[in-house]
Image: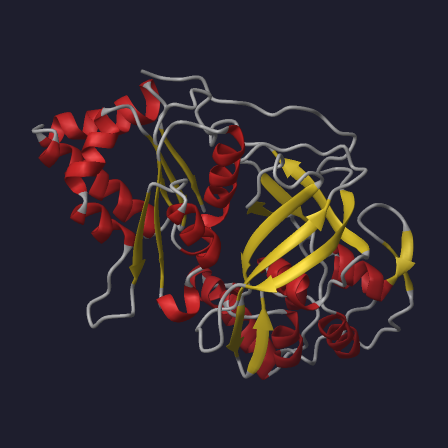
Length: 392
């Protein structure tokens, strides 16, 4: 019953170790005025990179810190922003450039607390610092909501003797992986991303996600300044048998790879049916890719579209509730060989969807609980490999 999964097509000289500098060519807001969220659509130009991807792959992007955050940290340290330092690649660059490009500044790590214990003189600040450093749970809670500005302000009696001594306490910027939201056949030399911009406030200061804030606030169109590479997925792939039905469950930005799947299936003229479960908070403001999805449904390319807008009614409704409502038909698709894909939040959504799938198989398939668990966890996921997840 298992069909082979399609793989990647080509290699490029660009990689995580040698990323390509892509340019942003389009930047649209997907959520509307009044939304509690700020979700955006980004189009990156990959022309000349040789990078190739398959729907289901991710784009790795290296972000940069905001100039304002860098300036605030340099000011608190008391160093000259253009003082030369050795960056993570062994090059001599101004301190502000190293801080902007090489190190994670929006979230503190444990090393900074250890580093400060050698620098804060005796007094109330040192007492407080040691209390944090010597309690693992307190330390975890402390750094969870703080960046380096928060910490340098609180422990302002600490004086680093050199920029390098501060840099040694930092963590390097890691790439952020985004599910690619486009088909390479429909959009040659482009990669589309669906990104929720993370913004929040802690300790009286506004903050933002490193990668999402960089894309939203600190990139300019038609400027090659976004280091990217393709991260291939070994498993999250469309079936090569194009007559197979697919069931896609992707609330929020989890819809990203399914936009790519639908585009690819339409391009290829796949005969299998496409069923999408999508959810967000409010239909009026949070229906991502609404016009596209409704147009696919209108033209029979998206055979089923079930929506769960959690806050449009007194009781919250999520994608797993819609799955239960259509349990009989879902079982018919699954028993008929459909592939099931889940993308999005691992901690809550994916667990709830997984349990719903087990319950559905048990009830609609007339199985015992043990048989249903085996069918889903071993049959669908391992033996047939047609229950595939991209969760984070």
